[in-house]
Length: 593
Image 1: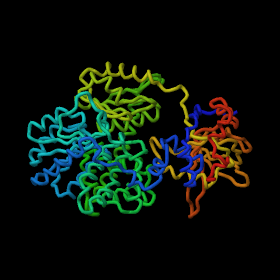
Image 2: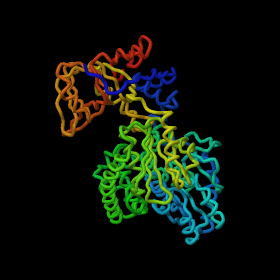
Image 3: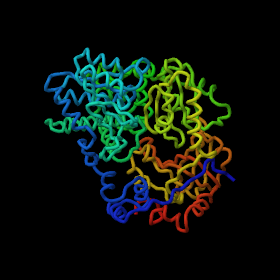
């Protein structure tokens, strides 16, 4: 008997309000899809329209952001006085794309702009004293931060002492003591009435740009054209792709797919080998964003900023090639550094989190923490001992909220910041052991299960998989954090063929009436030897499609497999009688009614 490698978990079927069900039926949506939309927060026709309709119509009024009007008024004063403005952006993809789009918006408004990206090694995260000095030398009386600044209390005070106003635009966790800035545009403020609390740094910058250009002739359209940059920042920062974030990503991807990208992004697509028409969340996450980040990890992030702001193709091609080379170097260095970090980890992986320190480049510790967290399924904090104070970067694994955990550990830090999925800090001298003990205790309180859960969205019979079902599920795109591609429990799949595939994968063909359906199980070479033709399996898989020679075929991407019967038994235990039917479309077919 084939046993699953993870515990298959079904949440109770989402309650579908009658208004949502009626609206979905009127749109030709299957009950399965309507149930998935309900589980993603849709409650009525308005939510349905926001999710599936024109993404522009789903954007919120930027004037609702706290202090957004104050920020715009101050920038208009700077324009009237002919004074340049410094735009200070963090050195990751979110901060860099936000810096670029706000720089473009301010130039469109007629302001002189001094873009500034800090050195990851010399200045670290947040507004720096070095940047304040540079702003003073350039004659800037206003600094606008992007994707940072909420925790830069001392640096904001320094700027104020020099007669420079600071406008903070950010989305990070709010510390107990806020900077005394002229404006703090952050949707996470406790007094915020803005409908979307999960904007990224680039998302907040995009909203400020919308407000700045609202009354400029042609300005609203010009602001919307900045959605490509905002989308990249939103995807790169792993923001939930629901609500306004999803609308921003839809707009940005559409612009990129239509080949309307600005010179820098067009050059970066070519350097990454991505056809414009095929740009999606995955290609941004794994190809574009790492290249944008690479400059700051193994060089200077200002190279990436210059690329995003490039106005001619020749300059863009040169800078894109530089980023591509930096990304190759980054990958090589990361592989070596992760191997060293693994050697320094707790033997046997018994601790609830990974906490390691070593003389690794500061630019790599975030990538290292992400790799370790993904591979280990537990939070990871990596410190670079090559700086003074030690610089740390954390990535989530399991359900530990890093912003809350770092707040609880703040006595060990010179400074810190972040959000639930990622955080960073400068460690007080000699505090490593105390921090490690406290962080491990916090992680232990939320330790992952010995056998990881696998959340399954719905169960369907294998013979109901068809193109109609695939078309319905595609309406959920773009998918990502908060709006994942659905995992389907597929009951009673009969195997007709199985073989090992290159790279440690298994390819399985299942019968579907008179038709067959290809499936692939990545990193499961064991299935090629355990599964035999004629076996009946229950699968947990994603339904995808692929094109070859102009023909589209359906394919299952298998996450886990077990001998048939597990799904019915598990659903029968997890839910009252009839629960299996409640997770199926009303017609029992899985396609549109």
